[in-house]
Amino acid sequence: MSQHHVVRMMFLLGSASTALLVGCGPQETVAPQESLGSERQEIVGGSDTSISTHPWQISFQSTSGGAFCGGSILNERWILTAQHCVYEGGFAVTSPSTVRIAAGSSKLSTMDSEGQIRFVDDVISFPGFAGVKKGKDVALLHLSKPLTFNGKVAPIALATAEDEAAGLTAPGVISTVTGWGDLSYNGSSPDALQAVDVPLLSHEDADAAYPEVITADQLGAGLIGVGGIDSCHGDSGGPLIVSKGSGKVLAGVVSWGSGCAAPAYPGMYARVSHFQPWISSFLKRSPTIRLNTTNQSGGEGAWKHYRVSIPSGLEVFNVHISGGTGDADLYVQHGSQPTEGSFTCRPYANGNGETCSIPHPAAGTWFISVLGYSSFSGLRVHATSY
Figure 1 (tube, one colour):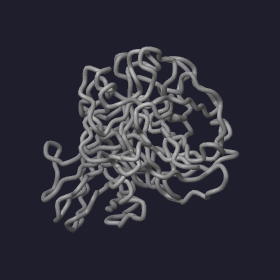
Figure 2 (spheres, helix red, strand yellow):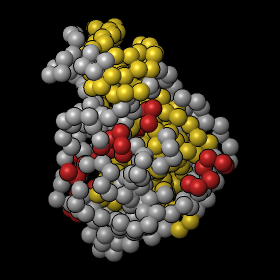
Figure 3 (spheres, rainbow, N blue to C red):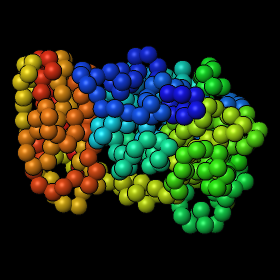
């Protein structure tokens, strides 16, 4: 990834980068500017802040505690983050079995002792994502156990189209971005949560700053011609907030930018008001279990097949394999058993943590198949829908 197209996420050795970047065979090609793990991003030009002031902020981490992105609490079980934090190409997304969220502490070093740790059981991607510069950079995380709200853990409201029409995200409005991202381009990362105020830009000014066409679902922020304040590597998925009366609303999700705090290039954010109807439609939903089988085993080169019936009108169909030992590969296809050359989704990652997330699945029979890249045992095969 070049300096000029920074995806604002961070991977630590031993973190989810292993699952995202290392496969057991040929992988789906991701455009260089969208390659995950080669860049890091944090708040530039900000200062230490308290989680009590920003209680909706979470750290998105590997299960071992390596922080790589941020996110915002929407309710006890739902987190909003950036899609590029979970995207693995095609319909493949990060396996929930490899990640967790941490909330309730200003410092990463005290999250385990002072905060709340929650594991993720589903990842929901906004349909049609094709790289950060083309927008649609939002995703939802469903938690396996609800958060407990208090003064350091609390939800934030979503900006709506009505808020935008009322001028809450108008050019010149001062927004606040928070995160644990780098303090400068390729610089060090802080232990303490950082915050910085940045002015919002018009769509025309953001579009003029980049050679790419900036889609309407993106929001720019920064000091064009001055620089010095911005989100950066590691901040991806985190909140950009604006004031509404005596409270705050979530107006943006940290997405991408050229470098960090560069004078000519503003930070780019997913425009929350554009996605608010889609996001809100999930907040009262719970997953429907379509398949849940455990302790599965197989040999190298051997297939195991399962089938589920999917009704019409669903938003998303998620299929996971996780746990156990060895290396199993997940294949999913509608209407017929998948093969190595014919499938709707095949993550093809190392180990047994793989997930397919298929938006608006066709009604009918879906085949879920597992192929032993090497022998495997103790595998869980799990499918949900919303």
